Image (cartoon, rainbow over all chains, first blue to last red; front, side, top):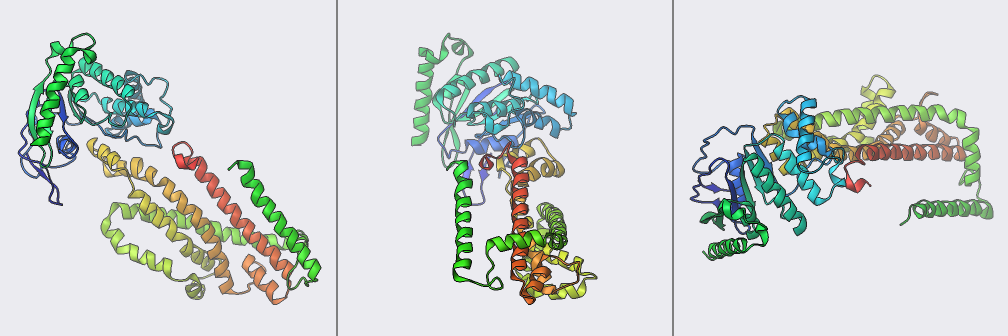
Length: 239
Length: 256
């Protein structure tokens, strides 16, 4: 697959990728490596200049997207924001609200249904944003550096919440990040990308049994994986 | 700056100015047909209230009618523009021409063409008030957060849903800002057009009162009419600001 922009920039080149259902995939790379572009191509928000996407499963209407910013409608309450995808699909208001409430509850936001985005902290806005992406029970969840703007403590907590959700529901997740630590903590498969033009230079796997290590984030296994990913990233940047 | 000071400072300045004015008029013995003191103006306003009020009502009617038509048509046209680039490209230059042509220059024509004076004044006030609402709302409808637009695309929202749930709410602060500008402009349009029309009968607005007091050298009464015009303009601005505040306070941070 390839994506060129009219300005002549080639964002993604010679890219071939097979994603299995239920994968948690991280796209790791420096800024400008085309990882966001790749995510937009997968979401159908951009069309490839060459090549194509084949779907093994029908995900129509079952794709969730979490942007870098919370991207909430400032004029709507948390509940209305989360209910939006359902209402756009024509779900009756009462049912949409019930599901939105459940989705907010899963993100620990019970009690904040009537809050407007500007009343919420950055971390809570991002939770609302994730609740909105999850409200349609997506089979594919695309995330574009969703926690990059958050402080470390909030980011760790959201990482843990996201992992728990994925383990419960087993949607396919594609997570764009520039953090080695985040990619190792979350993903089973890590694809390292190099910039200009964007291509995949390395693929690493984190076995589920390693992730089951108690206190994974502070374990030696985690540190070893981070080291390996970090080396791969340095090699990608040098390439 | 504290809220109290924000009210107290201009009030004090205003009081000092009025005192100075009153003193100057007395100290120099300036005759009232040249410059009446604020006290005399106040007395005239109270005395002539019953004869000035009907004029104020007429001016107010024209102003509000013009503002209403400008808001409705401005919003409708902006929505039309947002739906079709071709329509926008074809019509926008004419909206600009309407805006840049001085109303004083075309008011005589409108007064000749329109069936009655009231309608002519309404059209003039509308022409002046129309453009800010159109321009602002058009900008607002095109200022949608690109990520939110992508989100709506991702969930396969149709054109109608994008307009109702995304573009119109986004444009709301822009529309209201345009409305506040146009509120003042429609009053100016109503007054200017009436000046062009000249002194009418007993049923005409505040501008006719100002003209006729000029001819008759009733300067205190002229000032009283001026006070009414300004007071009315301030009232329009404050009410529109209040409406804007009430509608936007929940979500617009800079409105706080």
